[in-house]
Length: 68
Image 1: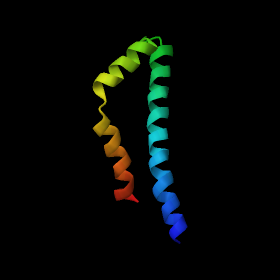
Image 2: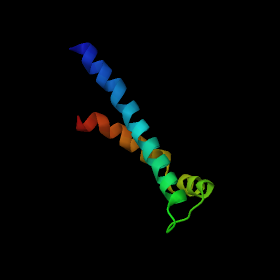
Image 3: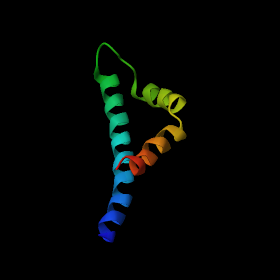
Image 4: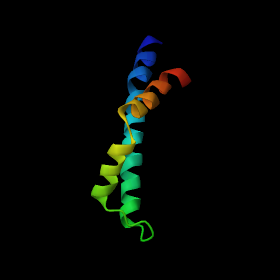
């Protein structure tokens, strides 16, 4: 049982970070390719850095341990 708990404790935070990165990349692709939005790729990432703080990402990662 202990190896499974350790594996979950290691894998879930990595999966959350991966999901966050995929979500950001998907948002950038949609913002670039959607003709109604038309936000350049570089501008999307620059604005994302201004809006999202490290504590926001850390909060999502630490929620993994509280919600399982």
